[in-house]
Amino acid sequence: MARMRTDMTLIAFLQAQNCSNFPGSWRHPEAIPDFLTADHYVRIARTLEEGKFHLAFFDDRLAMPDIYGDDHRPAVQYGIRSVKMDLIPLLTAMGMATRFLGLGGTYSTTYYEPFHVARTFATLDLMLGGRAAWNVVTSLNDSEALNMGRAAHPAHDLRYDRADEFVECVLGHWNSWEDDALVVDRRVGGVFAHPDRVHRLDYKGKYFSSRGPFTVPRSAQGHPVVIQAGQSGRGKQFAARWGEVIFASYKSLENAKKQYAELKSAIAAAGRDPAAVRIAPPIYAIVGETRGIAKEKEAYLASLAQPEDALCLLGEILNFDFSGIPLDEPIGDVALAGISGQQALRDRVIAAAGTPNPTPRDFIELSKRGTIYEMPVFCGTAADVADEMEAWYQGEACDGFVVAATHRPGAYEDFTRYVVPELQRRGVFHKDYAGTTLRENLGLPRPIARGVPRRAL
Ligand SMILES: Cc1cc2nc3c(=O)[nH]c(=O)nc-3n(C[C@H](O)[C@H](O)[C@H](O)COP(=O)(O)O)c2cc1C
Image: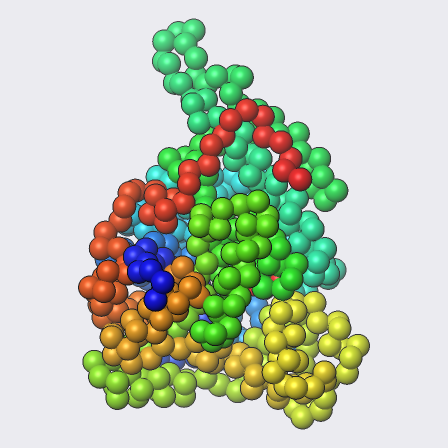
């Protein structure tokens, strides 16, 4: 081992919905069914802060998974991510119940306006004392387009071209109040804020424009932390340009080492400091008092998946309707080329199937969509789980992890009680928060707002 690293980043993967990432999770007897109340999320936030997690983050979709057969009924009937609430009120509730936990959420660059997103997250960041993060996504599918008044989801690379402008615009607004602009001199004739330290952005791009001046001053951490998770060639280029925390889907340790090194190089090639970007793959952790107990828990969890889950969630993520194709029929070139959702997943299935024309069954079996095996599963005693995490982290395969829950809230409670103390004992994970802002706790630089923000091209 080259050097002992001691600053593992831990992020909790959350959903403002009826299940965790794992659609079968709501059937687990330990799953507390109060997911429509603030108490549910506040309880999780307190657990995560007890476990010194850096960040709790919510994913988002703007539609039910209803592409399969153009029908929402399976999603509703089987609870396949059929609830999807807006995450800002949840983050606020969680933030009010905690003091140090970072709180992040996903807002779409395809279906929202930059000014709206900039203002929402800047406000959240102020309310949380500098603990907010924004996960920048381009969204997935036509159902989202239809809910948001569009006819169809835009093409993959076009979404990223638009997203580049979107982020330029949001960051421009966030940087348009200089750090010392606010004075609040209450004397009559005194200055509220320096007029020459608050700037109009005057952003005019090909896809977005926004004039400003922005209406929300800077927070304790400057502005929210930017999260990104592009996996395709274009997506990684985007992540390397903007992401301060990058979620990267890695399937194995060997594959992770290679891709982690490539992503760090891409960040450097984009003119940024790779050490100032935290790369974290999503994983599941299943921990038991003994290996046998953990294995039993794993088998039980796996048994909660239902056949409908996979095709519904594949349709959602790929923006593709498998319903007219028999399970064992090869999918034609034209149909495959028309997959406009997560193309990295399509390409991974094609590569793993060893044929340019995989079948729907190949997609189900090779993606493991809708099951706990969609991500790496670290299963065993606390020491076993910590061993695997350490192997990835010390092996330069990541800077930390996005810990997904097999069920809620139990999986976060198990992780906090069993695995966190073990990681702390080994000296790889912090024993306490370094500061009060998310940037301080992640070891990220505080951005400086100086002068008129320019369009960064
Ligand atoms: C941990 C993680 C969380 C993600 N969360 C969301 C999300 O909430 N909403 C969304 O539309 N996409 C989400 N994505 C998808 C990514 O933004 C990205 O689109 C995907 O990884 C495919 O890469 P590509 O866009 O470059 O094809 C997530 C990906 C990962 C790995």
